[in-house]
Amino acid sequence: MPLLLPYTLLLTEGVVPNRRCLPGGRIRLYGMTKRSIDSRALAALLLAAVIAPGCASAVRSLPGGMPGVDDRLYFGRTIPGGGTVSDADWEDFLRRVVTPRFPDGLTVWSAEGQWRDGSGAIVSEKSFVLELLHPDDRAVDAAIEEIIARYREMFRQESVLQVRTPAQLRF
Image (cartoon, rainbow, N blue to C red; front, side, top):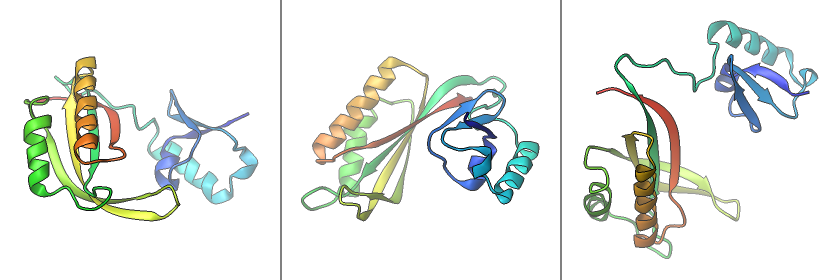
């Protein structure tokens, strides 16, 4: 039988694979039993259950807000085979590819990150992050797919990371 834990433990103890958020602020952890939890983890569980119950995805609605989506796209700057995506290249990409698809607004910032390549080596890379807040709509999904495909094609990228979360939007 899987163990049911408060979601907030994950925030204090780190990411736990094979989990599922359940109503009432519980997490189902597969492959974990009550015997596999030490006393410190149990104390953290009890404290988390008292202090901050509920799933992280359970967000109160904003008065006057509307449901939406927050898409964050991470674009690596290193071009395979040599070179980098310059600031001028990025500005041109934003102007010609992104802005026509999202003329109502977007947010961009520079970042530095790392990832593990196929051989297991840690690779550091500068990147651009594009955040798009929008209604949950298939036409918007298609526009985002086009942006990703164009960037991968133009700058010979293996991938673009996309993170999608539900959002409450209010202007």
